[in-house]
Length: 317
Length: 322
Figure (cartoon, rainbow over the protein chains, first blue to last red):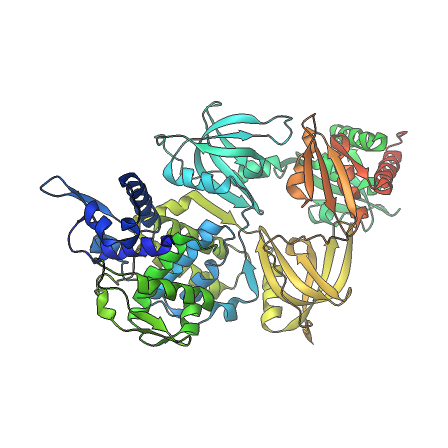
């Protein structure tokens, strides 16, 4: 039976951490059972390269050094791999315990638990059980979008990406070339902010509108990434939360609580209707139509016309 | 076996550091400290004796367990230096920092919890060093109504009943109810899961739809019920719920993003045919109205009728013939 990968990685890690001098590839090959069984040079080389990458992924700093004979050796230096002293009190430990359970994405959930385990091994207190103190609070970060992981890695490694993207109202997806800057989750949905190479402008993309695979391009992009990315402002603009005017509507008494919650003023008309002034931003027409016969738009005329158009379309439908 | 080798290796490296300091540690304690099941821990303990620091034949870690305690017979096989706790990797720092910052921004969170999170975040940033900066590439915001959150949190910890006025968008009405809160769940928005005394059933209430809230003096007594697994989402239609079919044009594709559905079939015009289930199809009349010319209800027919009817009534308010 092939030797389990975790066993092989663990042996390689312990070898590199335990060695006091750089170990040559041939020495490692002769030391690890799994490498002896690897067969051909090619098979071994591929396996060894992948293993080094995996160990780096989990945080091991592996240096490559050349000895006097020009042979390459590998070394996990003590000082670059040691966790600096960190002292967390019981409350802080419980807080991190809660945070470590928040991710619902396999890779980040694994990484968060890994961080917690390293802190635990370094003596983080464990007498406070976060399940006890925080059992009634469950924050979760949902990640349903397949595009998330490749984009996260591309942001981290500053790699340009290509993907097909369908705008909210577009019939067909379009190929976009993007330098990815940051990912943001707002109201349970993930967005990517970045530089759109074709449009030569900053753009925000909603991950659920990416169709097909995200391909990352070779090389790193050099243009600076802005410190502050305005994902939320952009998305709020899409959602029509930027209101610069107000509208006047008649609203049936007792109906439309969310409209009342946003109202600037409410006046009882005495005939079973109220006159309500509400902020008027993009998207208000569609929202008002939801209330059917309980809303009549008074002004502005343009909003009234939009609502009537929508109602006609439904009445005909 | 669905075990991620990287996660397991990472865990075993921390485990050897941890066990070296604690001869005879209990399986149950170690599993809890590492946030894993006892079975997962045992499977790690099966691998560790096959691992060693050096060349073939010698220095394998002689670790075993009787199922209760864990013994390491040759701790010297691993030098004190090789067993030191390892630095935090970039992805690890990102995962924990982004989550901790997100929780700290939850409006209504207890101040002591928020301060503990911020202190822990600062210490973690310092310990992680420059790799911590990668965490700036991800951010998460939870939405919550701070005042409502604080009242629900207090009611849960003091085991007291709540009175709320709650807005139900499906019926466009505000109703009063008494609820026994069970837990607060944040998934983008924040919800309270509770036993609703009015419907005698478990219900989930979104905090931004709570119009008014009061913590009552009465004790909260939710019946003992299995906690729901919410990892698949808060809205989990039942198999027996009636089916609704909606056809939308390109401008109505957002329906598939906002409504959990069984299927979304591409249509030739760039639109979608979305099939979803809901216990109460009449609650989707709002959706039919909102779609306007961007889509329509295909089935059930009475739902499509009621939307048309509502639109005609609304047009009457404008003195328009439908």
